[in-house]
Length: 88
Ligand code: FES
Image (cartoon, rainbow, N blue to C red; front, side, top):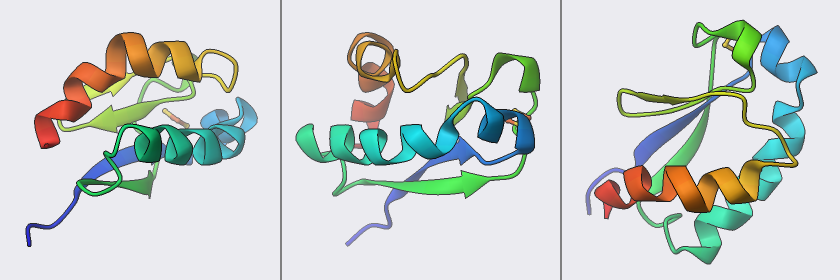
């Protein structure tokens, strides 16, 4: 069985202040809903760089910025899902 690919969540202080800990359980649920939890593993990261645009997620070389608990579901389905399905 291949190792799961990491989906990095920035746990830096700016992203922390912008709600990354609220994003985490919702993101885990979305991965399960789309059966991506079999191939993708959520991992915490040190600062990913664009702190003023937190919260920040990274999959492979793609950064997803300005993620909030409120916009996560829309951003996930409209934007992130296409990238994440590359792991299937
Ligand atoms: S603290 Fe998240 S990008 Fe810097």
